[in-house]
Length: 123
Image 1 (tube, rainbow, N blue to C red):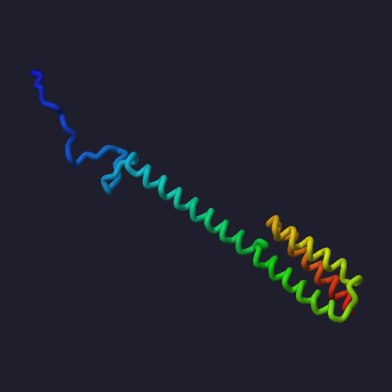
Image 2 (image 1 turned 60 degrees about the vertical axis):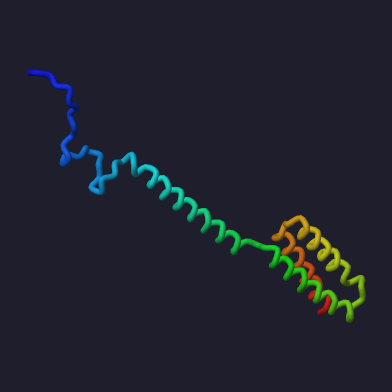
């Protein structure tokens, strides 16, 4: 047989094993899969973050708790003497200081305790 210098080409109709029907090989689909996984992970993290922000204590809830306790303390000061309300005032100061440190759960607890002290002393 005589050797020719022509290159042998693959026939048009014969695709390799790894070629898809759409014409994309698995190597070409890898970035698409990677982007799909990144989008899925990003969506999951976004949902978890959104859920934790909405369910956890926030600065707004802490401020509301402090304001309610302050209002009740001011109402009780008109009727009761100051020594009975000193514990409630100290608890309110504790709530304000923990709010500055961004410890919202402890702020809410301290404000609720102050509110309870005011309500107990006014009865």
